[in-house]
Image (cartoon, rainbow over the protein chains, first blue to last red):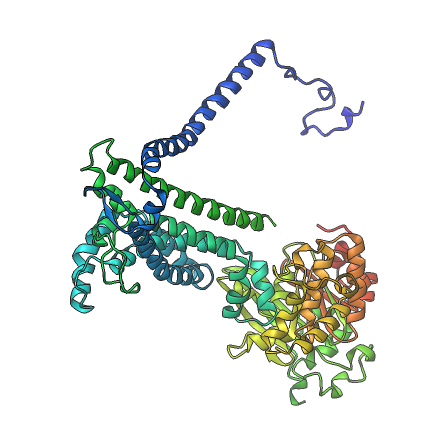
Length: 327
Length: 301
């Protein structure tokens, strides 16, 4: 009766409204198919995902297993405190302090160069650069991360090293400073990109609040935006640090590979040798199963602990960024 | 003033509806302090018109790229009053409000045309001192946006930028502003607590306190209650009632009841144009235009 009132051009719904023409219940066949497909999908995806998780675990187990013979036979204190690294001498001496300090030297040197540069660039990109510049610059900076490290190594040896010898009068071109500079360039894209993301994550409303109170751009950045983005900035620095500490090829080519702690300690023109370069350099000529071989795994284990803890710290700060974003 | 009379042309949209506006418009150039003959006898509301606009806009247009945010707005906003701007979403209310303290500068590819004067100075002049402008034209935003700092530091942020460093000065100023914003009693015991721990309504009042701390003459409020519950809204409205003794307030609101409750003057914007601008009582009881009437009675469209 009501349908008689509906205009002609409208579909007459009133009669069919009570009858759904497609069944609302699954047939047993459909039900089974859905069940199987759902489970197959879930399990295959789970297996693929666990494979990568398993890989990490296996690496840990493998490295620990190979390092254990060394750690049980030789004194850990000597390993960590002695600077005498004579794996092929008689008797063998495995003091890795010089290698550890070498890694720290080039990494911290790289950070000292890369952090101020990276943060300035991030601030410029997030707040000052016009949109177009930002669109062009960011991908280009990210390409820096895609250049193979051996290419950086070539640059270090063929360009930077002679330049340092000629202009800074260093006795050798392959030295701590050289490695630190190249590592800094390699860490820059990570630092810029993560820091820029965290600065952009601080919403426009916060910036407006600051500008609205009469703050200049510099005041807004320094007093509001950077403090609010500090978690992300710390994460950026740590990620850059991980890139630098784990890098092998470049430091092998650029650092000079001399097992020593520079003395005086600030003399960056001297060569050092890093943990990564030692592993890469020695592994090829070490008989499998020898003390030296296991000592290299012990170094690898140490390195793993370094990067793993750095990773945990950066994860902590990145999770704080995500939380702040959701606010 | 000599330029009283040659000001015929900016009288655009409003000339038909409000006799009051006709009389006020010629006065745009004159600053607050020289009140004068502008208020000439023909005016109906002497009480309101013995002052001239602290903000006066003349054929002001604002563009986002090629789209027009607001066009040809000509209106005067009077000191020590609450002026409400109402209108449907996307009609340019906020654009106009944010133009007053040049907040739209932060959005790329925007430009302004015409004049928008605050206290007689065109704010879109290249020589405008933005820091001083924004310190004296405070703003409260739609979403409470406290900094991730303590309550004290939030309020003290503006004064510190102005170079006030002495602790006792800051303390008394912060206390005063928090009291003015009617939030002192709730926070006085934990001024060092993070502002983010406050509730939404408290955060908004904190933002008002923070805006008051720069000692503004004008307060721009961009839908300050839209994110708040009715109770917090009432508190903010009471606050506006208190504040208008000392500040000129311009408030953008979606809520017509709110406009009717708090404001003396109301402007109705639609599709980027100023449709009608009149005393609130008159606009809501005898709107001069059909569009206004449709909107305020809910028959818009």
